[in-house]
Image (tube, rainbow, N blue to C red; front, side, top):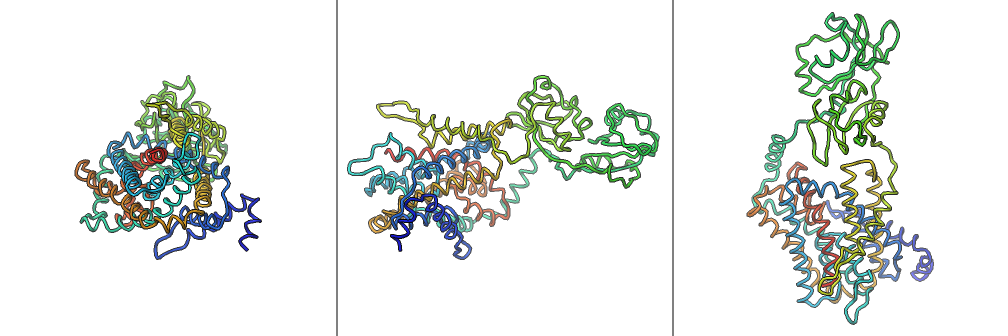
Length: 559
């Protein structure tokens, strides 16, 4: 039966690939109590089984998955990576460096002392820290023409060793870390829930004033019956009243009018008022007489959307927000202004510069008109900027081929490093200047998830042939080594974080799980803390860890 199946699939690598993915998803959803392997581990195990049965991977499909995955990781991490540097970046970088360097040193030392086969150290490092970018970078480095295998070994032998070592050590890296993180706070006498409450109070105390949301926008149809509102141009009323509002429409004598700043209200007019009623605006409006409301569906029609508008036109750069009159001319409201990743105060005197990004809420027609005035409206559409995506990948691959020679040894980023670097650059540049590089969230998920699973399926198929032999010969030794590479960096990072960096224990544990790229361990922390605030530490360290561990994977195979 196996021979018949092999004959059917030998000429159809796409069918084989999706069989592995299908079985992998089924395996990944199997539950052991509250624990689930997940898609990555499931696809890896399915690939190993198929590989052990003699099925072979398609190198081109695996390479495509690798490229999509590594670039997408960099694209996603770009903004967070730079933000982590700006905000408490030194501490998060330190934690990520401790985990990466300690894990790297232990894996390499064990390989030398215990006489592991070439490539095993890279697999141990990647599996024990559950870092797929490390695995991808190591595999790509070995497959490149720059790698020369040791005497008696082939490139395929080394790649197979990386995969099997990763598979053996990955299980404890995944399950064991979650188990240890679950027990560690109680063993150390740390109340994560109390720490979360304290951190959230501190964040609220020093955080910026709350921005309004679309839910703060109210629409009222009212009748003008106050003498003090009659006979004045709207522009004067806008300046007198202490909150943001605009008169969107006026019904006068049965006719619907579109007002401008010079329009004068008359007694008996029915008007549509759109206002942002934040708590501060509600407080400012208290004590004022309210106008009688009228049931007029046309006046009440207001469908706001939120979008980003980027300032690119020379003739609008230098204007203040007040001079733009966004609220009165476009019935829209600016909730945020960002310049080079830094949020500015949203006040009438704030002067705009080219490259500023405004977050605006208003009707589609108002947003489009404002986009024309300022330069570029970031449309909330499904279209992906594949041109930028493709050329950035080309640039990343080319950057990865460049190297400098030091003491007779060529040093370069490699394909993984080049792709990751270009992903970081494009992702961060996109966050600052959103006129290019659009990759909607759903598309990013597909690129990252599908790319990863295509790569993992190929890894499993290639490594399955030598899995049983490796398990029988050095499985227990590899497992113990993997446990050490998982636990020692964790303990060292915690001690340094608490004693030297004086980090809050909850934020520190979040940073450690980020440095070890374990989303499962973070979920355990969140459950115990009854809060997601540890995700700040996770994100900060994770951004650094992805870069460091990718480089580590490419380097360790040469040592």
